[in-house]
Image (cartoon, rainbow, N blue to C red; front, side):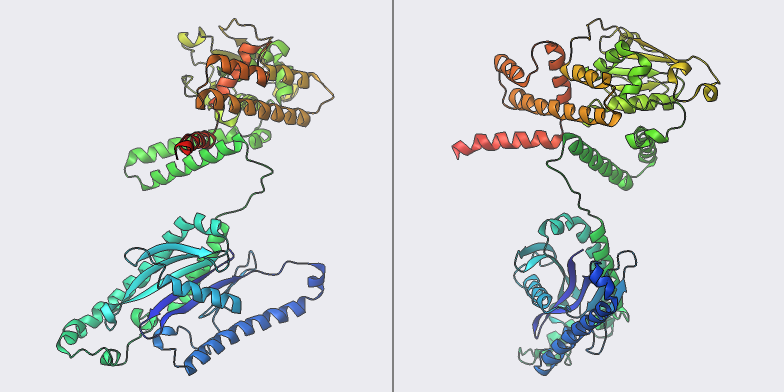
Length: 559
């Protein structure tokens, strides 16, 4: 992460001072010229390190000559080389010293230190705060107090600041930084509190100060010259700075690896938004389970993990890894079932009806669902890959059942479901027939109470069948064709949702919009059913964005 972490201290004599600083040095990008002169670069790196150390020494020595350095303002002696840690995976070096190695960073950290311990303070003077600008960088600061029996008010003021130029990255890392910086701060405070209690037990300073004559001019000398004690003295930690170097180095490494950038070519699709929302919901559920108590939460967690595992088996990336006979693509499924049966099955899928596969081979059913799910937006898919009991349609629109599971009467007589029974044609001869010849191994029987003709529409299905029947188009080309058709109809869904649900237009206006979208004419009823079903697959992000935009537009005229 391109950031810098520093520990700052408010000295009673000299004001805000930087005590300790850790920065990350990234290795230079390899190039032919750099590879030819590796030795030269190594020398320059060593010269840069010596220059950084020299900068720190010069700053310390000049400050000492001016009388602006005291015990509380100094962490490492000028002769100390500092601390260095190297990440073997990335080659990044983490350097720690009292001041940054580069003069530009010196002024940036100095300004962040002054602002964090003066004007940029949260209520109560303890806690996190964010400030900064494009010129001097953005700062995440956490101020805190350390107990000191000899200090004014029996405590000293410190802050830990993280300086970075990327404002969005720093804000997104706020919960992570706050959680781990608080652990470091609590460790320092608890250690210093023990030392404070011991010192107060030996010589209570409150009674000593109350019985002595107070004079502001000689107040520091009344404390035996300890107006500014070092943090090492306050905590009695012999390896304090080495420990802070480890903590800050890990923080920079972990904070840099927890967020990654992805290249998005254009705006994210609805499928991408829905997948992000589902991942966020799963992470929130897992965090709730981790904090819950009792056996019920544990059993629910294991049950959900098993469901997630089944869904994971149905992922496209896992299709080729499933052993045994399986459907490889929509064209393969069409060849096995037949043209008419395939169209009937896909029609039910696009209309949002419940698709039930019942058979003894769960892997074959899972491969069929993987192929059929590609017809729908991600938000419209609710799948139970294989179950020993029937699940209602509101729970799933793809349901796999074992052969002995009965179908309820209200489902078998419903127009909104289709059943595919898979029976074994020739058992025990898979090796002789071959895994690809599914039609020779299984018999497929498709049944549905729906008597509506499926040869008219929807338009998406008609175009898909033209692509599937064209043998000159490869499977990859057909997949890209389906992707374009889905994006086209999802755009129509967005327009219809905005027009009918958000704006609340009437039936006549909605009919005009459908004609404009090309959803009228042949197969109009099927097109409308498809659009209404696909509305349920819109992401929450898109819906909330539309509602916010509409509400903002309603308020603007009155304002």
